[in-house]
Length: 382
Image 1 (cartoon, helix red, strand yellow):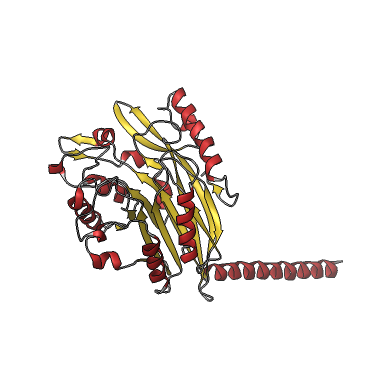
Image 2 (cartoon, rainbow, N blue to C red):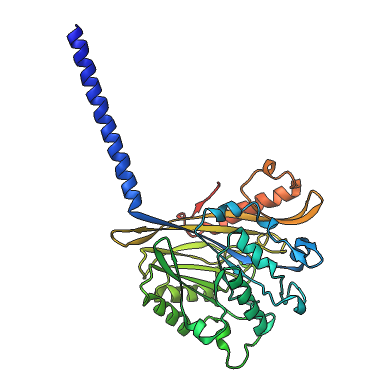
């Protein structure tokens, strides 16, 4: 009997050891497979506005502003991203030009500094308000972005700069970024200086995308500032411009201007990616527009994966965090705060019953709009 017991123990030990070896091999194989891939996470938001109540609420002294509090509840999503995009829909022309909101924006320099602090590292500057303070407003805004180490495209200081395609290299993935606007609210560019702003035209769009392709990038991202304000569906012009970009080789298309969300749609890419997507409008990220649909926005997140051995890049995941802008008192201070609209009222005790109802309404609206064209887009409830 003792012999049988010893034999049983020996066989059990061998079996356990073999299982351990098998599990260890699977773990090592998984780790090795992960090391063969690169993951790049990108976040994008819509219009970053600065209406006069926003800088009034941000004032902490006579000529001192702190714009970081509005972003306190969403900063964690940017912290987990490699690149964060947004549309900077104002200019920083300086105090001498007098700060103002709509219709001719001019915001304090510290707005850009605050955006850098909370995680933005790339801003689009081609929009209908980029020329609100003329050439000087464009140039000074670009200087402020550079001094805060925020990359940008869409407006430029020279013809050479405009003709140079912006290429981002992050974690072994290289991609090009171009940006265009439908117009500048009837403002005219100085004679001989059309390079200051990228305006949408078939020829310029196709030429820039073709030039981007010549650099052998992994994918091409295009931003458009277009569409009809407050409309929750893309119009015929938007669809035409998007199709022109896709046919030329765009892989990812981001857009804003309507100040409301519009659907995200997948498409078969004609570039290096197998599949791409267009976000027709990412809505308002922050503004003083308090009505339904315009008080909501989204943080769109997508992941690019690159296989190191094959060099193949693919779009792995597209998700979004619906957001809602609170405006009111927290303690004894008036504040704007961007909130993930999926959260419960217990997490934000400063919300009134009416505020919470508005936030829930915006959450339901955003889900319905964003996922209208595609079930591939995932809702992020983290």
